[in-house]
Length: 487
Ligand code: NAD
Image 1 (cartoon, rainbow, N blue to C red):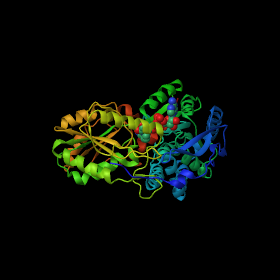
Image 2 (tube, helix red, strand yellow):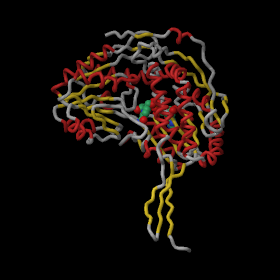
Image 3 (cartoon, protein in one colour):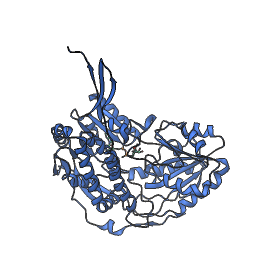
């Protein structure tokens, strides 16, 4: 099949944009170094922004430390009001931010708008959560209370697949709980985060929020920096391990939200045609570049053939192209390195003799496009099944026995999430509870909320984001133990 790809000529020929600044201590500033940013739909540089070095990082950390006591001493209500204003800024500027996000990230405009809307909703949701002192003992002799205090300065490092949503979660958690922040977006997608920072200067006092674009080395300097108390990192498992090792030098607190290889187990009592669109969307949204996308589908042998054809049909219908084209459902892969990695997995899969049911043929023309590709009869030990592909290619594997499907789904160092699909929700829930993951869904995948913890088991992460559990991980518990006897 040859995929038809819509390209955006206007985006390909527009002048280089350079209207971006870092945010340090409440001021928009430049830097000596710069980062070129590529539009993945054209493969061309369309913008340039300042890149922070060690000096900018030191200034940002100093500003954040200086701003910390006053911000810490505000009440939760006062900080909630600021978070609400941040959410309002996201909504007021949703259209312009979404367009920039599509240009740098590649995702369709509608999904870029959704990402920004979701960042607003999740932030407001988190800022409604109460962190109350807990009474552990209260009797005539003793009172023992557990209280939570902000940590200080939180360094936030984000990836390129959902830069605004994945900044908003840690940012709200850190700020609402009384910490100040230094945020570093991915060098592939720094622009929307920098624009948002500019808009937020009116919302947060100077130094409370600092935003630095920069390369991978900037991330490493943050993890080593003695002025940063916690790192909230979202990215790959490999980098997560480096972050953990590097943060050990100063014993920083850590939240690591890492990669996944999510399995969906489809039982024999479903209607393949009805669930295929749901499975397809959960696997291919953002061209598969979602940590919790479905990355392996285990289908019962009774419905295997029918599900394979229904998924292939969905893949053939999907329209790929520039995210700026309103008809586009799937955009490009975000960057050249990732494109080459996913193409490598596709080629290995083809060589292995697996059946490619839809997609698989790379379109001509510029941009990092790959059509949604459905693969059947693939070896369990292939890269496509074992690795996190993080791209638009998904294997459908056959099983005849649920215990065997569970064993194969769990036979991985990843443990982010997974799902079970069935007409019998109770049976499915019992099976889902045996998935070794942070979140196990039934008849859905990718549903998260501000009040529900999200994070990975095994090598998919450390700690949880969102919910009271997530918020408390941006705080230090302190026991106040009183012996009720005058000294
Ligand atoms: P990445 O690990 O390459 O980079 C993530 C960030 O880390 C970037 O900002 C990068 O500049 C920075 N970085 C690179 N080297 C560093 C170092 N040594 N020290 C500190 N920071 C460093 O990840 P990516 O390719 O941008 O993102 C894709 C990955 O992120 C996938 O594995 C995906 O599953 C994962 N992800 C996880 C979640 C989650 O919530 N669990 C969400 C989205 C993405």
